[in-house]
Image 1: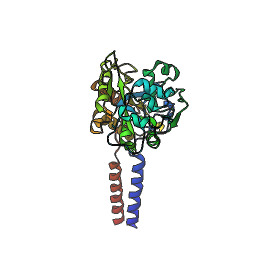
Image 2 (image 1 turned 120 degrees about the vertical axis):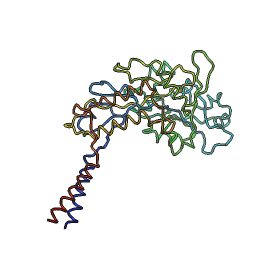
Image 3 (image 1 turned 90 degrees about the vertical axis):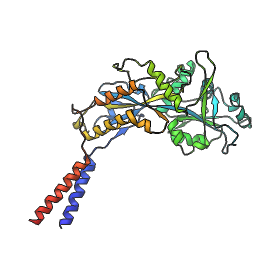
Image 4 (image 1 turned 180 degrees about the vertical axis):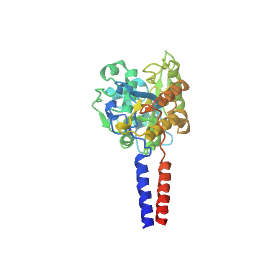
Length: 364
């Protein structure tokens, strides 16, 4: 009986610990109403890539966490000859032409890729297939922002962001996720799509698709081929953007564009990933102090050290932005005070104390 009672008490307390101990809950960027998702469902934060989703900053703390490159990817055949280069080169104007429907065959844009000419022009009648992401999508926001920067005509027709009316030209096909984008391109010859570099690097079918480098030109200088898979091109873009970093005390201090910067060697299709948290979490709305404390600890680590230890597909914000992000994280409150960690160890101690108490009662 005593053993049964002991096991029951331990099971009860551990269940209680799992329910009350810290757990971080979040929503991704495909949420239109930031205010709604923080209402009583215990959501700790929202991750997003499109700053236009933030229609109101009231009651929110927002900060950039990492920068990421988005790269076009292509697929021509299932088995590549070792002599063929593992990259395909386009100009920004050609990329726009593919997605506005004016370029329908890779053979029409083979001048920068003589090694690929025999492959992509082998079948005269084969047209290209272009894939694009659904709306809303952070990847779509970064990519279409770049197309708008490359082409004033594109920008006038298809404004980027959550409310964009871009449905793509006739030959494009809509894809739900980045993983599905890689799969779609990998299984369809003569196709093109776009994904964040981390998804490309970790994709199951990455060996079947080829990243697209861009031949860019700024300020009348010579064209230079830059690669989105080269981590230095992203870091260079972050550094260049920080040189024009506006007042850190302004409401839009966190909204720094990395798109098509006039920087020789910067990757032009990039953006920050942002985090939104409540300025004050209330216990009456279903939040727990330990949950908010854990989220803050995680983001301090991620902003200050985490990206340096991860794969080079991401880039930390520079020191000026990073310090402001930490300041924003430290401003978060729980019922008006600094959130306190509630450790599951405390409940283990409680369980041991209850077991000891029951053993004492049984012995007496």
